[in-house]
Length: 316
Image (tube, rainbow, N blue to C red; front, side, top):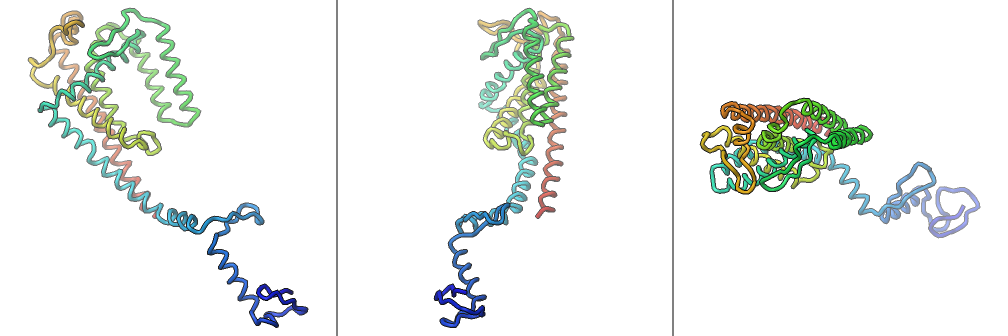
């Protein structure tokens, strides 16, 4: 046996070196401790394979593992606070802006959703449409090519979501296909396209606000600025449109848009024969339905956020 310190060769198996006097059982852990100061050996699946990890990196990994439950818990608590206050505060700010000179900014945002509502409704009825500023040109006749193309796109999106096991998007695709079938079965598609300018603005604004409560793994949650931006845009747009239709009738935009066509209220009342009371009532009812749906999403967000906090506390 050779001494690991002085290299003296022993003929007999002893517990200490006959030359330098070290105790073999105590000397070996000291050598291993010096090696550990330089690196930490992490065993892999094969017992003979080892990876040398620098000590500072190993300590950082250990610290991350130690603080992960606490970080998850604090993130869950912070998310619950967001869900409690974000939507009410956004609504309050939008309501205040609606009564100031900044309401023009809200009207511009609402205009984008307004024209998008025209275009989406036209696509669902099988007509081409191009949303532009203040106007959305669209076809007058149904094109089955557009109908099949839109249905095919929805089905393909649902299939991709199914393959990825994103069941929420599968449900959205199914709802979109059902909505297309319902719209295609309705009559007076022209009036429907006109109505869902303002109506579509309220529906789309509701969807934007509801997107704030997207699941944790969603890209909306990972994109912090986009999440809050969509909430603000949705709140400003919805409040602007809803206050218009729940306010005095003299504020309704009857008349003709210069260089474009008659306004939507004028088209609905003069071209399609809707009484003013019926038109206003339909817009207000649609807005209230959107509010009920948004309230349901808000309550669901609070409950799910609270349950998430409880789960994180139990894990810690």
